[in-house]
Image (cartoon, rainbow, N blue to C red; front, side, top):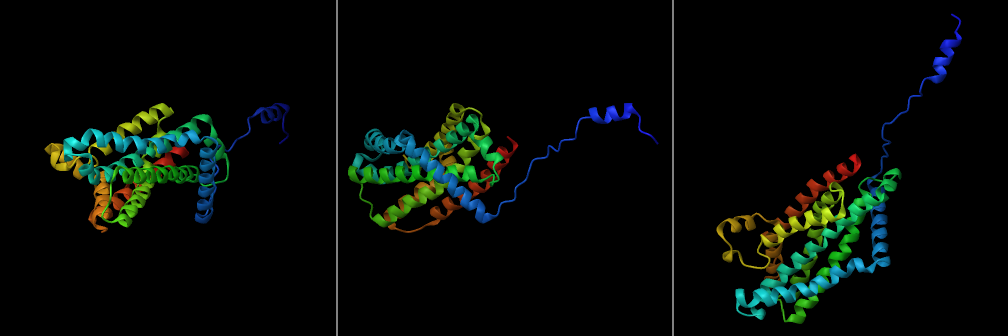
Length: 278
């Protein structure tokens, strides 16, 4: 049949169909690891150009042990020197965990500034920007842990097994790197960096003070003692104390590793899925 002029006009004015399905880029495990390392190098360059981002990882490990030792030392153990075996392992865990909050805040700032939009447009693994930020954040944990160890020795803390104490510090850094996925999830969920910091500090305050980091569990109320028994931070603190005193990897170290891996296994996929949705 002959085509009329009206039909030709309708075909010309009809909108073209646009495929709006998201482009899926399949990245191998090796390439994903390399891209995560490149993103970690980007984070390290950020610390180089803005060294003030590391000030809290340097100053808080100095102020924390001195402040807590002066406040709780006499009240709990009778003197600061007697309190140091309780204080230094607990403050080590507490301060390194505090340093991990900055990871979520930095992720929120990258999303708000549009940097992550550029990453999404690139043919890279979706987990690479977040994993790179967490690996770069491990630098903060190493600095904070090293500073706590130096300050503790300057205050007079002498662990029975120095090598075990150093191994405990390494365990804290590795466990914190896994736990930081929790704060990364908060960072990609909450839109404003100030709100991310507030929510992360709320979670961190509960994890830190509802544990045996600063006071023995025998001095806690009954209900708080049950909370401390279920707190992964308590297992991590007990593991560091056991390593510093006996140099033995006990059940607390194993439970802290298991708890850290569970947190990473739960919040890592949630973080990547939330980023993909945004």
